[in-house]
Length: 104
Image (cartoon, rainbow, N blue to C red; front, side):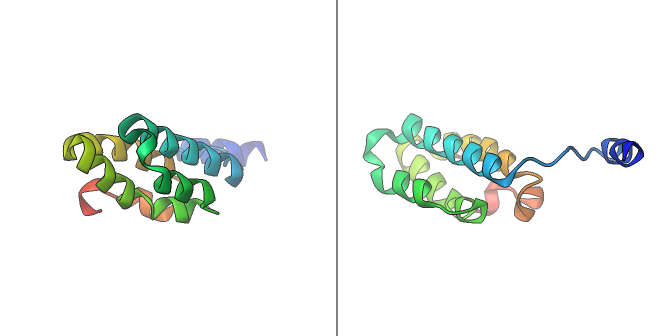
């Protein structure tokens, strides 16, 4: 077991987190982004984030979030926000590894 852990550490793999922990961390970050950039006016988007059942659902809400932030604050700020959010999916969603915000 120790050798296996060393091998994965060498490859840069970290111990995997529980899916619910990752889900809630990403959900909270996305909800905070909505509040910070859109305020209380984005109730529908907040509800969609709250009711998302899994990481994949949150993953597919990213374009909607980016569009809403871009409309309110500009595309540059939306891209910066989405880059940080997309990083939270890394190692937990296949699309995050190859994702570029420009392809939303």
